[in-house]
Image (cartoon, rainbow, N blue to C red):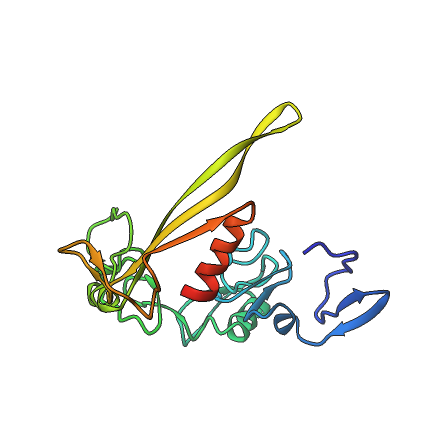
Length: 227
């Protein structure tokens, strides 16, 4: 989003849209972008409070500007904030309801995560660890969910495209003229005999698409018939 005009920073914000020569008042900027949050510094919307890191914002209250002031400790979440405005922002942004600092080890954790001093929870691999640094690569997948997905019927479609060369100025381009596809699913295909029976789900085994619009017709077959 590139605005035509940005006014001076103020407590109250007014967002206006210029559409076909007419100015429309945006009563809800989050509703306008269909998001839960909106960064007034970066002018972007985002779904979760922890999904956007503003380069000009406050790390404590997640406000659009860096906050300055005498430290105020919140008695509810145990975190310190840079002045009264910073303290109010963290209440309005509902950070107080999601992030808590332990009074014993001073580790910050997100609700409703359970915290035990000396034990840390990795948000990437979801494992608990006690020694830092903690090295992990990717998050583990849910084995039960994978097994459930494997039980569902799946359609497999393999295809090959034949092209002809056409001269286009100084270059030769490949132009598709023939596409042959074979389609099976778990309901109709026998993986032992490598054979298929007639199927009302995925249709016949072989589908042939000819002509310059063969790829387009194949796409219609995939998204309008099989999908």
